[in-house]
Length: 71
Image (tube, rainbow, N blue to C red; front, side, top):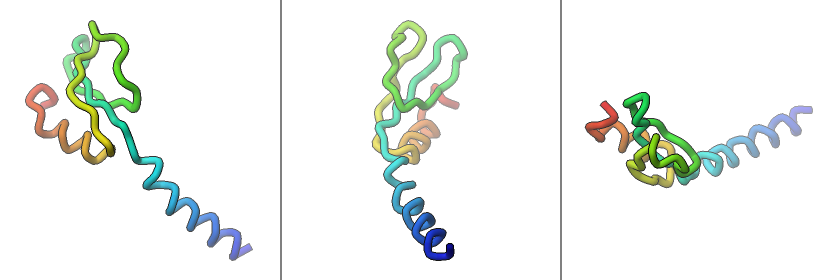
């Protein structure tokens, strides 16, 4: 039982960084007047303005903090 738990924990630790990889898209929602982050590119260009594409969620969050529209 302990061996199974250790293996499961190790697999989760290895898989977690892979799941955090992008791309992540930062978009400005014109109706809500705020920035949003998504794993899919915006298809509704009237509602969303593309602000950037990032490889990791951390990069996208850091970029959002520096964008004047996102404040």
